[in-house]
Length: 379
Ligand code: COS
Image 1 (cartoon, rainbow, N blue to C red):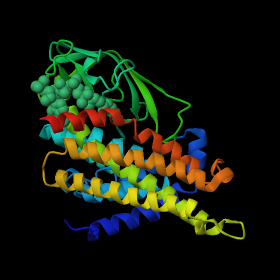
Image 2 (image 1 turned 180 degrees about the horizontal axis):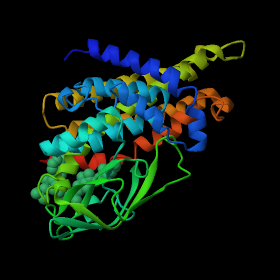
Image 3 (image 1 turned 90 degrees about the horizontal axis):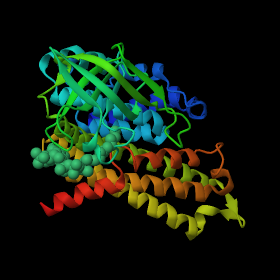
Image 4 (image 1 turned 120 degrees about the vertical axis):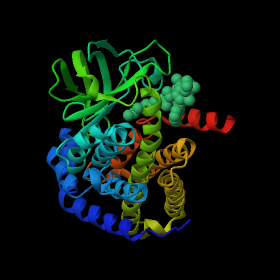
């Protein structure tokens, strides 16, 4: 395996760094405070090619691999986990589901708009009462002529309100039938669909989270993705890839917290010298750097497997589990190193910690990653 970033990765890293410096950094604390989702900033990222990173150029995307995708998210994570989460959910979940499982007509209809940022994408699996136990979902779709009628609700959905298009997973068969769930494409203006923004989140506050409500929403059969009944398996595969994106973002958040900690530790003086001279601080930095490097290696291992069409169920879960826990540890240590300053919004540490915490929850908790890993090990 080559451990160097390739030419495209270096280019995309620089582009994201420049964009983040100009468009995200100056505004992110305000967005965080106001829980403001900057749709215009998302659209600008679309024009830079960041919203269809692995979508082929023939569908209007950038045609990059998971290496470039991971690199872009690592750079975004260093600056703002919220914006990074929105880019990850848009690319891996909504766009990814249509790209990997949609038919040609659906790809032509939706991918160019998702890749350009004309459309913001959402993806709905979770419901108010079914998170980790996704299979027990209650939202139903019943056939009516050539259409389907959808009733129910999806919760904790990134871009559930501002999204123009969403892929949702809905019960079309019996409870607990793994072939009884189907994926549908929902368009914003469909009659009977509404959404409510979820407020007062702990972190990733610039990324919109909403509850989606379906009250007799009529969806044409051409919006069914793949075969009726195959939605759960499609969703599991989509999450296998999505978990690489959360791992990447986690690495970025961890590295952002680490870099801020090094800067502070070198500048801050106590007992007549820089606090970086004390082992109590420098050993924390050594632990952070070692764990971040390990998390990056696991993430690029999973990206390599994804690029080469190898199974990523276990390796994506390794990366997501480990990197997300590392991001929380690094955010926590950053606050500790900065002491009282780290506990305030004036310094970046507390935001890294708050944003990192979501990484251990979204797209499958750390506990679910261990379920996935251990099941794979026992196969
Ligand atoms: N790829 C393809 N198929 C998969 C799969 C994968 N990674 N994982 C499971 N499947 C298939 C299984 O093979 C099984 O098929 P059969 O019934 O034909 O044998 C089917 O899907 C059901 O799988 P399983 O029996 O393992 O389902 P469980 O209800 O036990 O759930 C977990 C498995 C817990 C792993 C799953 O519900 C899960 O990932 N939960 C977390 C959901 C999540 O991450 N939510 C966050 C959403 S955030 S945006």
